[in-house]
Image (cartoon, rainbow, N blue to C red; front, top):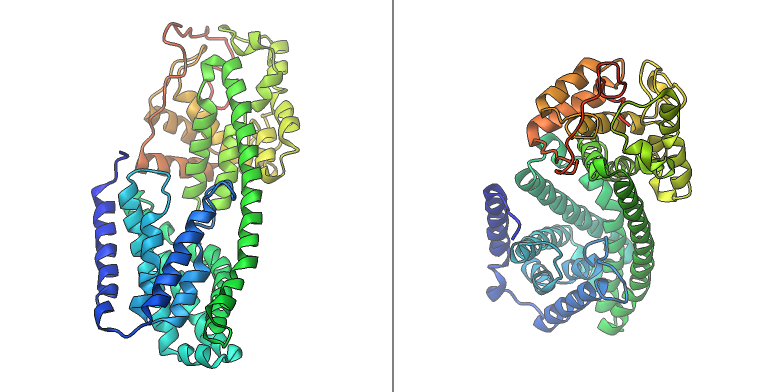
Length: 443
């Protein structure tokens, strides 16, 4: 079982207790229990379908909100909150501890739906739904959707701060902005369901609203399946590099992790963080075009050999230029060996001419190179590597990126792996050898 911090467990327990308080009035309220049962079964079925082989992958949207929001527009708050419980507790969970994650998801949805139902009720939305007055119902429904979104974002930010120790100032950044638009679309579908449910056509007509939503979900999932195939291709390329250059095995993944740490420290949104992770992972893919004897050479490189090695960013850019979703990661592959003072390669760019993504990867790449044992240098302690990065900030590296990595590593730590074969004794090149004495000049 994966370790979960005590802080995270306490946080989940507190949220669960709050959810139970929302459900306490259930025995004393008058509600059509058949409607609760039907909506709960429908929600649970949609959750299972979203993770079925028909869809192909666990759907990225996470849950099927139209049914939950329809319940918030139709039912009293405690009954509407109950709709989410069976589906959340029976949902597929890909990571351990599974029970804790299911309880967390159920508690989070109970609080979100309860808040949405309360806001909708207080603003008179229930009467508008019963009367079928759609224009008037839009206002209360919009407020309910906003409340639902705010509660989910608040709880998500809290679990990030508690479980992953994300700084409080960044835990909630962007959560509402990213989720409000898709949840609003789901809320509109939920409102249409509720209005049709209360119409003379009844619940059967309400279910028809779900058909276009299901088609949309399926199409969206196919896009993510295609993206997953691209990611599998990326993994295969990285594995090929690792096989060819055995001394740097695992280097690409660690550079991706360090790039992600820098991006998060700078407050970039999740989509950009993911792109920079890909940039770090793929930065050395061009080594597939470099002769293996040069990559594994123990001694210093000759000027001619160095020129061959320095072609690898351009090789890499050619390899990934056709992968559309990589975006600015392609520029990082091409320019991650540029330096602020213009002494880098392949084009000798200066300062802000170097793309931001490349400046991030350059720092991450140099940091891992210094903290890993290679054929031509021994690993340095993390503190020494950070000091060296700070010393070279402004000349070789962007000071902003260096400061971000230093802060992230000091807060969360870094545990570099020794990438050389234990059977191979690293050889330190002679004093005149290039590459071994300066960060960022590694192969």
